[in-house]
Structures are given as C-alpha cells and as structure tokens.
Length: 386
Ligand code: CAA
Image: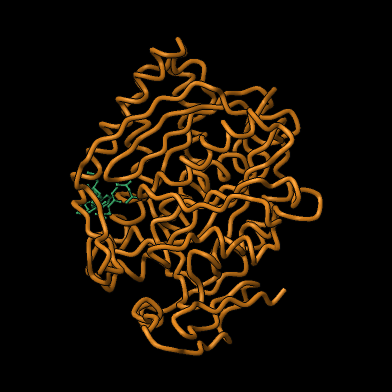
C-alpha cells in the first residue's frame, strides 16, 4: 500500500511588496535581493488574516463532501500561534465543519512543524488506510522593518491531505532526522517578531542538511543518481540553492543540469511569496510539481528544516494519477490578480497590531473567504463569507 500526499493547496493574500522597492528604500542593490537572496516579491499579510484564517482559506480547497468524513485528524504546524493553550486546529475544525470524532492538534518546532504532521500522518494512515489526515503549515514570517531579515519575510498556508493511494506523492518509509538545542532563530513569548543570528542560521541549516542526507543514504543505499529533483525548506530561495550545491558534485554532469533545472522550477512560487516558515518546503514542492516535467515513479528528495533546530530528509515517488493542471491555473490566476503595495502601504499594514481589548476590524480590504473580524471578550472572531 502506498501512503502520501494526495492533495496540496496553498493560500496567501493578494497584497504584496516588490523587493526592488524595498531595496531602493533600504539603500541596497536590487540584485542583492533578486540574486543574492533569490527573492523578487513578498506577500504582505493584513491584520484581518492570522494562522487560522490562512489555513482555512487553503484547506477549504481540498476538504469537501467526498473526503470530509474520512478525515481523522487535523495536525496544524505553525510557529505563529494565536493562543498559548488552545490549538489552532480546533478553530479550523469548526470553520471547515469537520466531524466531531477527530483529533485536533497544533505542532511546534519552528519551520519543521508541518513535516512532523506529514510523518505522523503517514504512520497513522498506515494503521488506518481508510482514513485521511489534514496537515497544515500556516505562518506569518516577521523580522521587523529595517532589519536584515526583512527581505526574507512573507506568509501564507499550505494544506495537505495524507491518504492511502495518494495522487501526488507516495512517501518512502525511510527518513533521516536530527535534533539539537541551538539558538539560531527564536521568538520569545513577548515578541511578535523573530530574533535571528542570520549567518549562523544558514550554517546550521547546511550542517543539518549534510548530516541527514548522509544518514539517509546510509540507511537506504540510495545515492543522488536515484533522484529526479530535490525540494528544500526555502526561507529565501538562495538557501535551497546553497544546500543543493553542497551535494551537486555527487552527480554527473547531465544529472547536475537536470537537478538545477528542477531546482529553478521548485522556487518559482516561493520567489514571489517569500518565507511561509512551516509551509515553505511544501510550497516549493507545489512549485516543483507545477513547473517541472515530472513522471509517475520518479523520486523526489525533501529537506525540512526548523531552526532551534530539527532537520529531516525524506523522499517519495510521483503518484500514478499525478495531475497539475488545475493547480497551475490557480497560480496563474492568483499571480495575475495581485495588488502591489507601495512602501508606505506596506509599512502601515506591517505595523498594524491587534489590540488586547475588544475591537471590530475593517474587512473592506480583504477579499478572502475566511477572515478575522475582531476580538470580543478576549476571543478571536472568525467569519466565513463563503
Ligand atoms: N548582487 C548579487 N548578490 C549580492 C549583491 C549584489 N549586488 N550584494 C550582495 N549579494 C549577495 C551576498 O554575496 C550574499 O551571498 P551569499 O549568501 O552567497 O554569500 C547574499 O547576497 C546576502 O548578502 P548578506 O549575507 O550580506 O546579507 P545580509 O547580511 O543582509 O543577511 C540573511 C542575509 C542572513 C539571509 C538575512 O536576510 C537573515 O537573517 N534572514 C533571516 C534568517 C534566515 O532566513 N535564515 C535561514 C536559515 S534558518 C531557517 O531556514 C528557518 C527559517 O525559516 C527562518
């Protein structure tokens, strides 16, 4: 029996910042951002969206009457939690009208949370092949105005269903992971913006990638020649390029060209959206699916990294019913209908914060189906406008 990713949907708001504007305002060379960092645009998330609404807007595309009753768990990976106690997955259960006899859990380990969800879901479906698990990666990446991390902000959500006989990716059983207490990136409870030791975080990412790649090869006997493409956690797309370059000498010249071409395909969407933290690896996988020419049976390697730190290398093969037409169309329509913000608008949206008292938010600038309409008695008020 094959188990893996059956559906993979994405959502982010239409408002974005062009990074040439950011470069000019911050007195940086636009090529530093475009080439040195590998980012062109970043999603700007309004105050009327949070991890729950981003997730609901992504998940509603893949949860419907045909699979709703099969869903046994919602595993919600996020590091942008809205509550120190209650899981974001419970809100999602209500917004999506999921059945009552399910488990709803939030998972946190920086950008690694959604991969924990995928792996736990994989094990669960192996025992319960008639069930599906809804896995979410939803975040808002915030470093702050005028910080080195500003160019690597972004946000959005991916939603995946993990099932038996999946259409998109059959996950291999072998996986290699590593965990170590490291202070490369963190966000204390009292902060809304992350703290980061930038260069150090890049080095830890690469060290973890090399360690789990080696462990994976020892466990499986597979080598780089067994892979058609790799998808990486992309805090910014140059990071994945650095990781790929670390192992590229293991491939022959023809394969190096193929891996590089597929890497370009895997960063088309991330380059325009920015970092999604937990969702970034899976947006990159979606980008690879939609922009490369892949065939059933071909093997893809995936590297997940969450600062702090946890890394995992795992793999899967393209499913027999692999079809990307609808997704490609959605992204074409989405990128064609975005609204570019000026620097002043971006700074205003970025600086808007939810108060800690009752508030009614102005929803007129948000066209999403699920929105945060305000706070009442310390409870977030969500609206489904579908
Ligand atoms: N043309 C082309 N390239 C140029 C250029 C130009 N005109 N000017 C500079 N560059 C290149 C530099 O040579 C450099 O390339 P290399 O990395 O290959 O050496 C690149 O642009 C970036 O330049 P700097 O290192 O000077 O950039 P910086 O000091 O402003 O910081 C950063 C870059 C560390 C990534 C910073 O944006 C940051 O801290 N980001 C957040 C942290 C992060 O994303 N870490 C990633 C690993 S942690 C993780 O993965 C978890 C997560 O999601 C956060």
